[in-house]
Image (cartoon, rainbow, N blue to C red; front, top):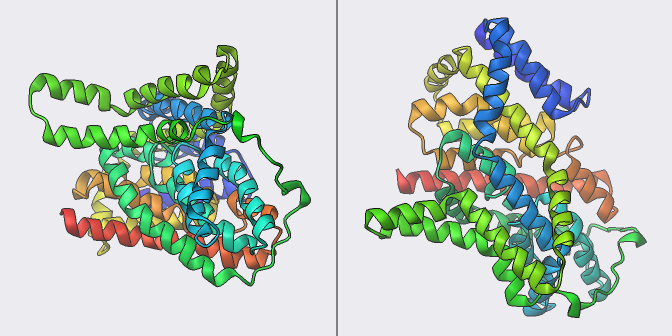
Length: 437
């Protein structure tokens, strides 16, 4: 009966979000309360579970996501992302344009959330399409593949960060593993796969025909690259130092500076000067950018909080241990099982973030009891969250409408690309498991 209740709650969650279009946070909240009551949690304890669930997942997460959003917004608004893109196109030239756009998407995609990166970089894609008379999908898909992969695999994006927190994984190691998996996934799903798409005829609206940007007003090249990539380099550096440096006092300092929240604070302080005050921007302008950034991610924060409620109800009802025992009896590797569960939820719900966080709450007992590497579990779920992108996914329609292609060609290009990066990600996770076990 217990497992029937869990399956029914997941089904209700999926139906509310995908069919009735109920906001994901409200869906999590309503389903979690109903599930808790059905599983025997006393009515006077339900609200306690709700509050504990929100606090448990958001306590160590809010700083990273909010500061990351502020950094990403500043990178975009200051013109640093434009500078990065322009430099990459100039360096790679016309012959290797797709590879240049792939690297650009990867670099810009690390600090920027997917939706922001998509809207920001599409004009660059079309500027190249118009200038060199090249097929739009063939040129554009590699860059968008890179954006998608960073969204699913690499902190400080919401889903990877939330899963690292949920599973008590190591942010630095997850980042390093994520980078190792992301590169082959991007290459296969982007430049290599896009070679098969030269025949797709795109008809982007004239609205997307780019206008010239004054390059003199943009931040310098070194400034743009260093500021945008500072969190990545800092997290990797401090992770490596923890394994190579001795001395209690030194290690304490490294752990303090290498804490993800502290890294994001340092990154934002750096960007505030290098992309803001140092470029002649006023403090009022900077604070406006930061306020807008928080508004942009408010709903993402609430969705993550909702997933924390669902996870807490599972724990407080005692179902978590029952699930752990049952899942251990299945003759499926935990990492593969995590990918399958997440992929199915993604296909039903549409949102990669919701799919990953829902799966994370269900799979938490398995991580605790099976001994599987929590960093790899987070990445396996991240890979599954990119699978089955179709008509209930906003990214599907963004791609279709911006590029002006048919639904059939969107399936053939966008949906297939997402499937390729998802399967490549799972393969990379399993290979890493063989190496590090």
